[in-house]
Image (cartoon, rainbow, N blue to C red; front, side, top):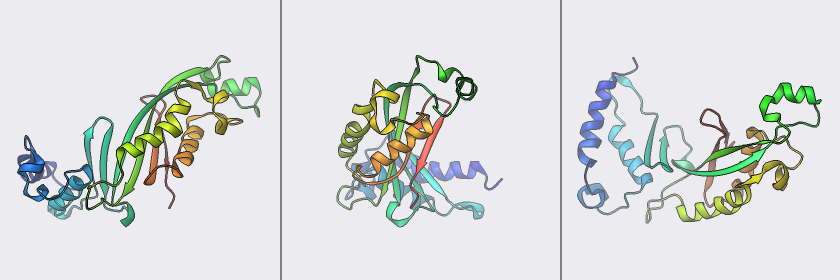
Length: 217
C-alpha cells in the first residue's frame, strides 16, 4: 500500500467530518466566520488540513461535491492561475447519424454499425464544463455560476437541445458527428465565451462513454 486507508479515514474523521458534519459552516466554523464558505474556499481549507499525510504519502488532489450538478476540485499540479476548478453539469438531447462521405455504404456500416442507420438515432447527452481560477477574496468564487449557466445555455443548450446535429448545427456541417468531434466543437465554442478559464469539457454520450477535451496551455 502507498498508505493505510484506515489512517486516512481517521484523519478525515478528526480534521474534517467531526468539525463540519451537521454544522452551520458560516456560524460554527471559526475559519469561515469572515470568509465565504464557497466550494472553492472549502477545498483550499481542506487541503491545508490534510497536507501532512502519514507514511510519506503526498496529497495530490481533492474533490468536493456540493450538488449532483456542481463539484469542485484541487490538484497539486494545477497551474497557479487555476488553483481550483469547478465542474458544472448540463443535459441536452439530440439526434445524428454517423456516416462518412469518404467511405462506401459497406465501409460505413462496418465502421459505425447501428449508429449508421439511415434514419439516425438520438442520445441524452450529459455535458460537464470545468473552469479554473483563483477564488475572489470577496465572493470566494472563481466564477459567477449564473453567468456561466447563461453562457452555456445560450451557446450550447439552446442551440443543440432537440436538434439534429447533422442538419441543424452550422459548425458541425460537413463533419461526421462522432462525440469526439462534437466535444471538440463545444470546447472551441465555449473557450471564447465562458466568463472564466475553461479547463475541460466532458461529453457523456451514454453512461459508459465519455469524451473529454482539455485545455492545452
